[in-house]
Amino acid sequence: QVQLVQSGVEGKKPGASVKVSCKASGYTFSDYFIHWVRQAPGQGLEWMGWINPKSGGTKYEQKFQGRVSMTRDTSISTVSMELNRLTSDDTAVYFCARNPAPGVPNDPLEYWGQGTLVTVSS
Amino acid sequence: DIQMTQSPSSLSASVGDRVTFTCRASQSISRHLNWYQQKPGKAPKLLIYVASTLQSGVPSRFSGGGSGTEFTLTINSLQPEDSATYYCQQSYGDPYTFGQGTKLEIK
Image (cartoon, rainbow over all chains, first blue to last red; front, side, top):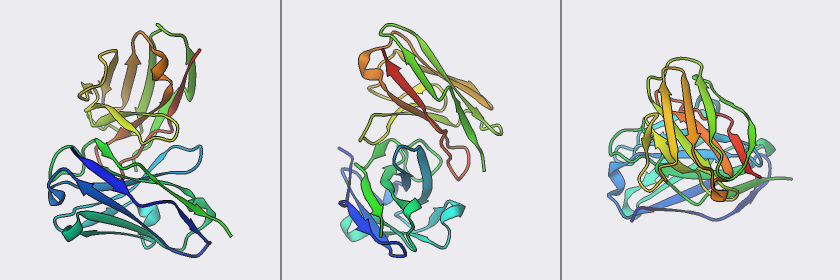
């Protein structure tokens, strides 16, 4: 069965960077886009971008441009999302999620990781 | 960017009731509209995609409709386990924006 398992809780200071990983299993890793979505405490869902694990190509929400990097390691079926220059506004649960159909990013998000809490505080 | 606006922001209803939520897009998104259910501390769960297609395993009391800029999610015969926050999301074009959510409370 499809599983996305994310790395654990992170606590960071303002100005630091965080890297959250998402390990995929149960399907052909390279065939499906992975998206990142975050949720600040008590707030709604915010789409951050996607990565194409086959090519490594990425698309980021403009507000994160220059501060976010999504990468993949096909040898371990893992994608990672690194966010730099953290502020308290980046305190959130970060989710990875997968489309149901191969090769297309503009689809619903069918499979989700369990979420990773990132807390930014001095 | 396409803005998604949900209404109401919260709703209280009783077991057995029928409720309808609305999601409006700032421009036409054809039928590229998805609905998710999220319970506290959990990842969102896909309920409906392309406006009206029920995701496998989702109870048939959930239904979706609409096209263009206005969409609805209806839950017939509310059950206690339907207490959650419901989000719409457009997958017409990036950024794939979400609505702000509708919190459903079961009395």
